[in-house]
Length: 70
Image (cartoon, rainbow, N blue to C red; front, side):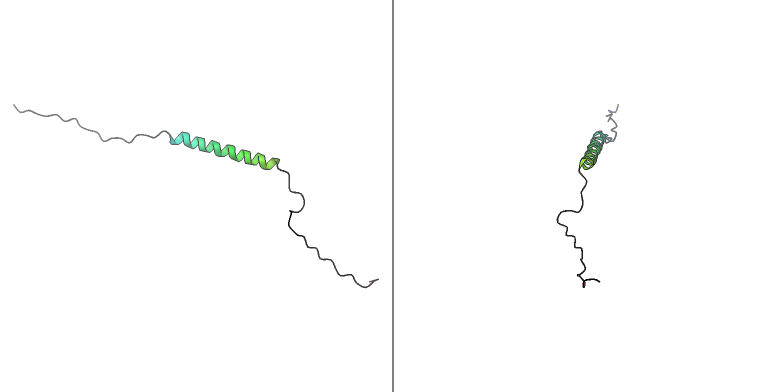
């Protein structure tokens, strides 16, 4: 009688599914959305610029005075 050795058939290891990218993606999207909303609210509450900006010279040419009566 011949002795036989049984070797268990090994299956190739399947890659494990990663479950953390979905919550991270949701978290990043939520932070981005809240940030954009806060920026929009902040800009909406800011006073509108009045007139010309400070430091911008406005040169308006004035005609030279002509002779009287012209």
